[in-house]
Length: 63
Image (cartoon, rainbow, N blue to C red; front, side):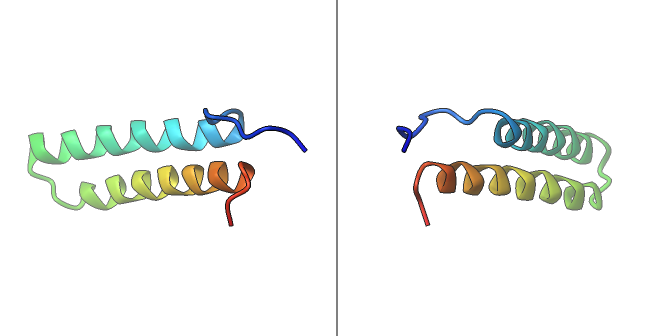
């Protein structure tokens, strides 16, 4: 058994970083343009981040 990794890596890191980029881009654009449906795209970015952090937690022995 390997020791828990304090930092995400690989596919998990890609999910988290992609989610961050999508969330920041969509939310800033929504605020700047007033196009509220872009917040739905930001929610997708949050979901990607959540999936990445959950996968990271499971990789480190969480349920």
